[in-house]
Length: 280
Ligand SMILES: [Zn+2]
Ligand SMILES: [Zn+2]
Image 1 (tube, protein in one colour):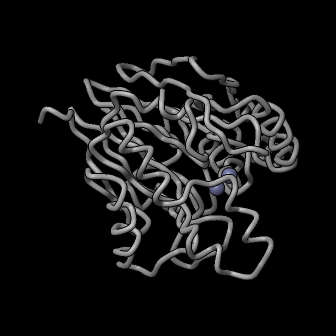
Image 2 (cartoon, protein in one colour; image 1 turned 45 degrees about the vertical axis):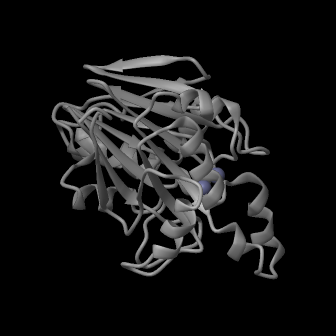
């Protein structure tokens, strides 16, 4: 009776030798959900003990490239390492099908090479895309995934997901500013996984390209306020801008604690958090 959260990639668009791009693994029973698929996702997934054939579904929060840059790797590597080939399920916001169609075009040469070379590989990879809007729900075995609306404007549409399993609810917010849609998704949940930036630091850096990120991400304090409003027991922060060093981050924790009274989790790639029902 628990949901396991593994921060596969805690980085951002900025390349970092220690942090893969945004991606979070959510495991509930036999179900393995990959939330976003940023840079290096399959390396981190391997480190977490899973291969791409074991992914139940990929959940995309929005179509920013840093959140899906390795989706092509997931598609290809799942295809060539699944016996028999198993369609990849992708849930994402409207626009996702177009992105996947273009990825498949990009992969056309590779797909033909492999089909011609391997006698038992006769068909191209199959990807089942469902474009989601708030309120939609999906069942994967005994796990329910609910879609909610987030606010990452001008990146539109953007969505968050709630995963419910045996009385435990975990929300994956993705990139968003505080908003009603996220509050609704979080109501009654046990944990909130939220991307966050240190607005206090970013605001001091005299570079317009960085200043631009302030208006469509939550600060650490805002993410903590959302968690506090919802009454979740655990706040998991990820997608650190600017990134902190290995084993560091106490300042992030302290900042979040000014607004949120529950458990605060953050750390390096592969940081793992177990979420149990509030009553336990
Ligand atoms: Zn984004
Ligand atoms: Zn992002």
